[in-house]
Structures are given as C-alpha cells and as structure tokens.
Picture 1 (cartoon, rainbow, N blue to C red):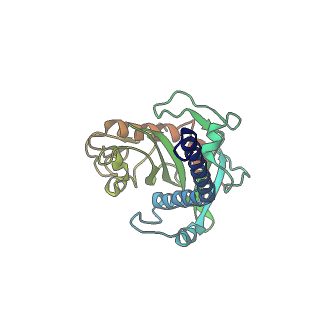
Picture 2 (picture 1 turned 135 degrees about the vertical axis):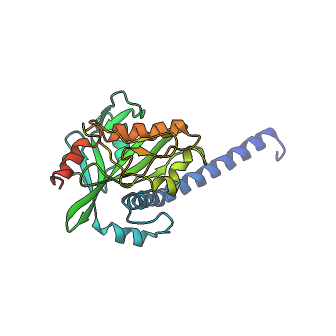
Picture 3 (picture 1 turned 120 degrees about the vertical axis):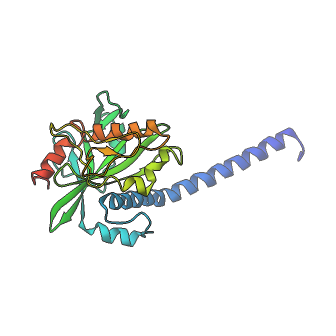
Length: 257
C-alpha cells in the first residue's frame, strides 16, 4: 500500500493541502502588517518630496508620525479641487480608480493613465495652520512599468519643492535613476506652468541649466529616453486640467481647507 500509486497520490494531495493552508494563513496574518508598512512608506515619501526628511535617514514609524504632525491629508474632488469630508485614513485612491462607480475613463494622454478617480488624496504641509505647500500624487507609464510618486508644490501653485517615486520597475542605472538623489535635487525651484498657464516642465535630453536660467527643464536620464518622456507626460497630465490644476488654483488663492 505504502508504495502504491494511490498512496503516492493521496500523500502528495495531503502535503499540498497542508502547504496551501499554511501559505494562506501566513498571507492573512501578515496582510495587516503589509498594509501598515505600505502606508508608512508612502508617508516617508511624502516627507521626502516636501523636503521635510532626507531619504538617507532611516526614519522609524514614531519619527514619521512626529513629522506628520504638521501635515494635513485631505481628500479632494479632483474636478472642482474642493476639499471633501471623506476620511483620508479610509480612502484608497488606487481602489477608487479601479471602480467604475468612483472613477471615469481618462481622456487620451501620453502618461497612459486609463482611469481617473473622482477623488484624490493630497497632503498639505501647514505653517501656523495655513498650507505652505501641497504634495500631490502622480503616476504614469515609463519603459517597463507604471511609476508612482509624489510632487510637492509651493502654495504659489507653480514652484516645485521636490519629487520622489515610491514604486516602479524601471531598469536600475537607467530609468531607475528617478531614485537618484542628485537627479531629484534638480527639481526644487523649477516652475510647472508657463506664462499662458500650460504645464511646461519637462525632462530634456542632456543636462539642464540651473533653475533660475531654465525654470522649465530637468536633467535627462541618461540612456532612458522613454522613462524621461514618461516623467514629462505624467507632470503634463496630473498638473493639467484633468488633474490637480483646480486644486492648486484654490491653494494659491487660500481657499483650501
């Protein structure tokens, strides 16, 4: 019996069931920790984009929460730019974008964004209770993947404070250079909109001049033209009429909550 085909099949099946139960149990038990760590990582990146922390720092959860004391998460209506009463701790923008009831098809765009959520989560950095800058989420396709990140904008609604990406699968040393501190250091002080109000900030080929001489240009990513174009496209889309322009206008006029 122990060497029969039936015994082998039954034994293998039992092992598979036990392993499946163990893997499923582990996934369920670890899910809460994984979600907590993902949320913490996003908070760290909000701080990095806003210039409130250095990526070289190994911030623990307590340090992140302390720095977040002066940051107000707000869920806005993306079209009007108005703040809503939606609880930001319960709002999942990615999930909202996938749901046909809480999103809409995006117009054709170079960032390859397929759906627009009706609402979006922004982070306002407060000084004496007044927003001094806002950190908005940006995303768009590069060469191999969708890049997810944050762009921090001063309360003049035009000057960049910083940028960071927290998730992507671009090639290390090429498109992956969006994580390079030297490249990210070129963003502060650049301008988003030209004199006609059109998003004009772009990643060029080669090196850009300093911000005071070339306010709309960012250093190109060597050997990563498609990723560079993707970054330009997502700035163009998310800071345009279909993205955060309405919200940033209200921020500049002091109308944000």
